[in-house]
Length: 294
Ligand code: PRP
Ligand code: ZN
Image 1 (cartoon, helix red, strand yellow):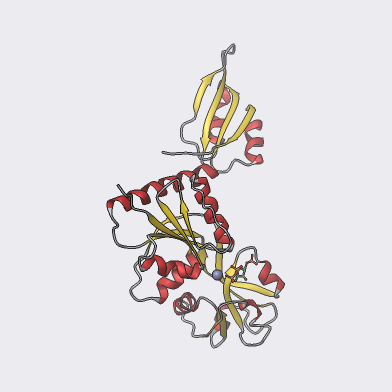
Image 2: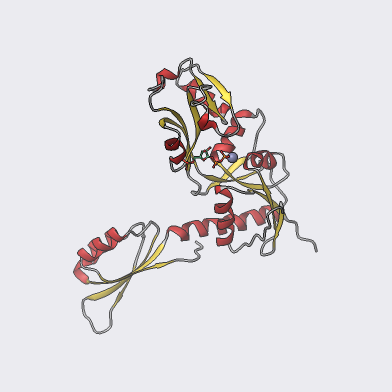
């Protein structure tokens, strides 16, 4: 019997690439790749990986070359905005590779507020998202499409503003640009073709999605254990971030002292631990959770 395989398109190099491969790894899937290899087989599940430019991912998924893809919302939304009969859809927002598409201007330029953009020239690799934004703001401006090095356009005096991806803000700072407004908040998306695939393929997609959800929840979640007196329990339980129903166990040899075990689905910071301690908790342990399945 031959099992069907699905294809997933991933970015071949760049920030998204590392995070995408990292997510697959935390799903127990190993992508062995060499520099020029564009096609890799995953042996743990019937999945093949196609390593491509991120800009190609929406089309590869939409046209059915790949069943799935991991791509930034910025690239996906631009393509969706640009193409008339684009039907690929978002399966899951993955939470990593966060960045924003923003309009930025020179520190001392002619454009200082959004309304100053009227009649200005804006350099961008995202012409459709930009025009869509300007339309909503009732602003008419010219677009200069550049596929790279957009941040140098104001210095070259070929644009008054730029509309580009900002992550840490280092690129803007290095080019004496400041953010004027956000056009789109972006993060990595798992996307798929709109049509229903064979039952075998849909099953592989379901399994992969369950693993991804588990891996992403586990990453933020911690297992917390602590000791506390009975009268302190209500306050302590309230302080545990994102935990539904902690387990409370009596401690051997103590009448009114208990152990509290809880899965916290939100980050546990040092501040949280200090608050727990101040509320009367002792022997506080925070442990990572490797895998999780609801
Ligand atoms: C993006 C963007 C900026 C930079 C912003 O480029 O075009 O140049 O990242 O990041 P920062 O705020 O952390 O400085 P990217 O590295 O994705 O390369 P690309 O433009 O060639 O896709
Ligand atoms: Zn890119």
